[in-house]
Amino acid sequence: MREARHGEALLAVTGDGSWRCEPDPDAAAATLLDLYLPVCAPPGQRFALAQLGQSLDGRIATPSGHSHYVTGEADRRHLHRLRALVDAVVVGPGTVAADDPRLTVRSVPGPNPVRVVLDPRGALPESSSVYRDRAAATLRIAPPGVAALPGVEQLALDSPGPAEILAALAGRGLHRVLVEGGGRTVSAFLAAGVLDRLHVTVAPVLIGSGRPALSLPEIATMQEALRPPTRRFPLGEDLLFDLALANGASGTGHPAGSRSVPPRRR
Image (cartoon, rainbow, N blue to C red; front, side, top):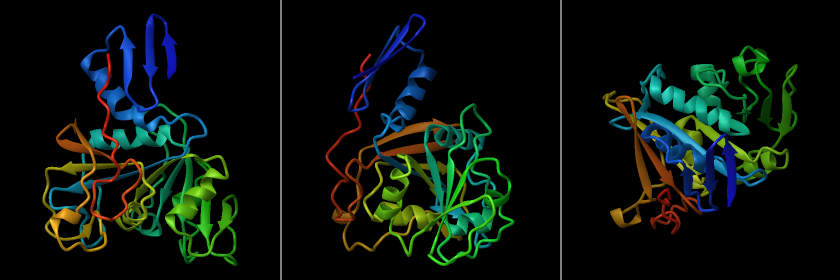
């Protein structure tokens, strides 16, 4: 059990993620504790979380790639909180090419994570914000032989899988990792069974066609579908689904792990 005291307030957190607080927090504070304490893994403990924001019909962007913005401001603040809580944020080449994200913490107080860019062909332009703005440390994962960029740390890995990427980051002291996008990258980490949690925010909007949020191996029956323990949190007009993947999404069709999402203890 971990305990923290601030003035007269005492917060105790157990290994399974449940918590108690004295005195009792108000409803807003309790919701924040429920949502973000599972992300606050103990120092040195590996933890991988992925997040997606999608429409009701499961799209993260239009066919042209336009995605600003599918979800609302409350979800964007949530994303910035997640960035502030992790050691590293991982994005694939499609997200960098389409959105040119900064991947920094701006909407809430907190430190910037290390920005990890998967650049499997070494083809992303040097003008990309994550490569040139120097707002936060950037680690580029590219094949051996790809020329390094000025001011950007480079890790040479040849076609690494999600497990290899997380192991390489942990070896650099980056234990808490947020996989931020895009859909193909999140799908690869989910299918590989390396995620502890998945946050999917659904906005009340219909895009109709476009880029899907998740693309996983086909299944034949609903019995094969993944059914992880799930909690729901309203974010403005959007709804966040917090999926506890426990031992990872194996793709076997069974619920992802046997660990339920623990209720808080007050």
